[in-house]
Length: 252
Ligand code: MN
Image (cartoon, rainbow, N blue to C red):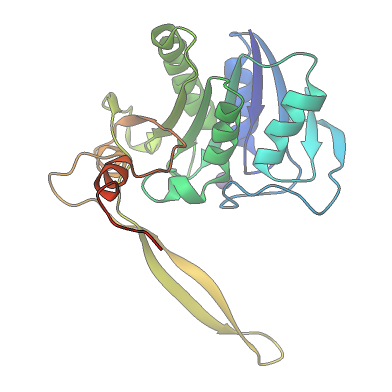
């Protein structure tokens, strides 16, 4: 099995190394990741600039490809140019900070997995809740265990999974739950500051809104300390609305 590992926190991020190590017993792992942090770039790609690729020595002595671009660029380049053959699995992460709720749409980690799914390759994103001490190795091992089972059940279907892991410093997770993406958004906030020349600038603050009581979602399950798995799709069409709109008179 050929595995492509990437992330959005950049090629020097500890979560990337942990995921590479954990996936190594599944097959041949190649790391292709952005040279700089790319969190929250979503599914952007590089169109108007050239992209340089560097052979990079990773923190654990392995060698990977550093890409001066976005997470989605990494997948495109890896699949079409850098890898000797098409990968059988794309694994993106382990991201620092959960990609639950509306964050799924902002996430570069998830976008890389979605890009893998564009190619019809089974793909997954893995993220862990931010905490004072984050055990990326434990998170990556959890993900590795799940991946084996998910691939077994999927039997070659082009699957796309978003996996989130709760803060492990509070104890082992209570289990694994398959849950929908929360529709709760970002609790918006801006800090207004002044630069040394007296000009105003803004810094985004805020966090994910907690889930409402009784709603089953990734945000709720993570708060209950479950590992969450959400099957994703990139079909953004609102199909029920489509059906309703067939009855609308829109003639010009
Ligand atoms: Mn990130």
